[in-house]
Each structure stands twice: as C-alpha cells, then as structure tokens.
Image 1 (cartoon, one colour):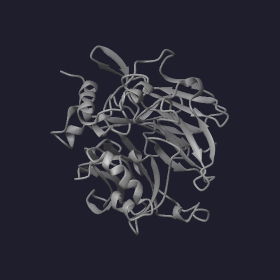
Image 2: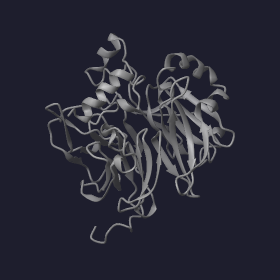
Image 3: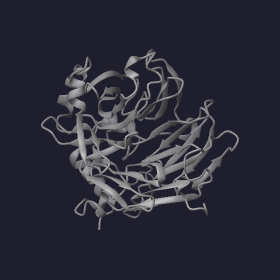
Amino acid sequence: MRSPVLVLALLALCSCGGRNEGEAAAGGGDEEALSPRRLEALAYLAAYREPRPGGSGVVRDDRERRAPGFDLVVSSHRPGAVLMDAAGQVLHEWTLSLAAVVPDAPEAKDWWRRAVLLPGGDLLAIFDYQALVRLDRDSQVVWAAVGGYHHDAFVDPEGRTWALFSSPGAAGRQDFVRVLDERGRMERQISIGAALGRSPWAPLLRRRRKEMEKGDLFHTNTLVPLDGRHAARLPALARGNLLISPRNLDAVAVLDPATERVVWLLTGLWEAQHTPSLLPGGGLLLFDNRGPAGRRSRVLEVDPLTQEVLWSWDGGEEDLFSPVLGAAQGLVNGNVLVVDSVGGRVFEVARDGAVVWEYRNPHRIEDEGRVKVATLPHVERLPAEAPLDWLPVSR
C-alpha cells in the first residue's frame, strides 16, 4: 500500500503543477519545488523532511524569557490534538478519525489541519476540505458539518461557529465564510470573491482570475474576528469585521460581514502568507512563507496604515523555510511563537532575535522507506490563565 505522503504527492503533481525551472531551483529541494501559489488542499503532505540532529520534544527552554501558558498542538501523524505544558508534558488529548464522519473520505487526509479549544474542553477540529467537527473533551462528536470546510474557524459569543468553506466553481475554487448555528447547521454564507469584487480592490481579482481559473483562486487560510481596539486609527478594523488571508492573492484583507464587502486590503510585502493577526500595539503580524527572495520564510510585523516594517525574523541560523503552512503568534510578553510546519519545529523568539524556547515534533512518518518528521499543521500558545478546570484533578 502506498504511504499517505506518496499519495498526496501524486495528487499534488496531478492537480497543481509547479513553478518554472528557475523558481523550482530557488526552492532548494523536491518539497520546496511545489509552488505555494499552485498548491491546493490535497497537496499538503503528512511529512516533508527527514529529522534534524539534536533531539526532539522541548530542546530549548529559557524559563525566564519564555511566555507562560500551554500549547495546543496538531501533528499530522494521526487525526488529533494534544494540550501540553512548556516542558512538553501532555495534559490532555483529543482524537477522531475522518472515517467516523466521512466514511468514504481519502485515507491520506486522515489528520487535522486546525484545532480550536473551546470552554469546558470542547474542541473544533478541521479536516481540511472534508469536514468541520465539534468534539467534547472526551472526543465524542457533538456535531459534524461535512463538506469543504478548511483552515480556520471560531465561535462567537452567541455560540455560532464562523468557518472558511470552499467549493468548485466555473472560475476555479471559490471561498466563502459560513456561519453555523449551535448544532452545526448553516445559517448564512458570504462569498469572499463577491465581497472583493464589490470593493476598490476588484482589479486584483480580475488580474489573478485568468491565472488561477483552473485552480484555487483564493486559498484563504485565516479567519479572525476583530475587537475594534484599533478602529480609531483605521476605521476598517471595526469591531465585528473579519481579518482574512487569501493566500493565492498574497493579500491580507478585512471583510465587513454586515455589508459583505472587503473594506481594506494590503499586498506586496509578502508571498503566500499565513496567520495574520493584529497585535495590542496595532502592528500586523504574519508568517511570510516565501520571503523577499522566495528561498526563506520570515515573520513580519508591519504597520497596517503606513506599511512600515516594525520587526522581522527570518530564522537566523535556524534555516527557516516552510513554503506551505506555517504560523506566527504574538505572545503576552512581546515574544513571537513561530511554527515551521514543514520542518516540524516551533520557536519562541524574543524581539532581539533570541530563541528562548524550541519544540521539535517527536512523531515520525515512514515514506517509502524514508523516515520523516510529521508536519505540524497548527500550534497555538494558550495563556496561563486559560480556563482548564475541566482537566482531570490529577493533572
């Protein structure tokens, strides 16, 4: 039987194509040669690279400089997530196979792309482009929504779930924001393409449509509700608006769900970006997958109004390059959590560039006789005060 890694690679080659020879050479290897602009959902691999020397688990820990809290970790070696402390000790775990909700789904996609921890130990789990599932703390299904849910979701104060959704269309794969009720039933759907088409940035969509008409036009990978704290400086950042990240447009945008219109957009400083978020000071933080030269990833903090680069980190000696996936998260002490998904590594980086904590995925996947590190599709630092009273007393 072919391994999941090989199956996904074949699907990627059949459905996506790649860059020209010069661009592929810039990637630095077979995995990197897969173009992030052409990669679709099925092109995500369960593993990319062989293990690095230097051990696994938590391999670096500066307790005085790292941010407190717990880490929610999704690894591609199985369909599940774990909650662990700073020492790497597992406090709780959830697991659910895709076959439990989509019996005829491809075996190679049986791992989660994202997990979102909810009060009481409930969890949202995303099987990319297959299903969105809400589990309780014992991994029992509360509800399941089958279909093209992907990348990101959140639950609002009223208990509704907002999620990214994708479906094929005449002009390529189209992205939507779906709103589900407390039982996982769809209440509303907003077209990201239509919202962009009604905006001043519609020419961006027209320029890219011909290029992407047979592929994934948007590949939106982030959906974040805004709290309005920065609206006085930039009105588009009003409370209730949504920060989105259409990766294949190399753009970060704000969608107003009331008018179903894109009200702000920025592009040109990054390529194939992931996980944009607004920091307390007003900076826009994101993971720039391809960097300025296409050979190295970096983390950027930019001023969303002036476009000034406020801070950046390209890994230094850590050889940071995750051409797909990847993440950056601002932490309470000003440090940044950086997820090298393809490399199976997580760094906590101080503003002076020092790595004060590092985690290396200990899980391995065999690919036609080669042992590789399982991908880390999602890692998130939860604050130390996160309500974890639902954990067993023994923890």
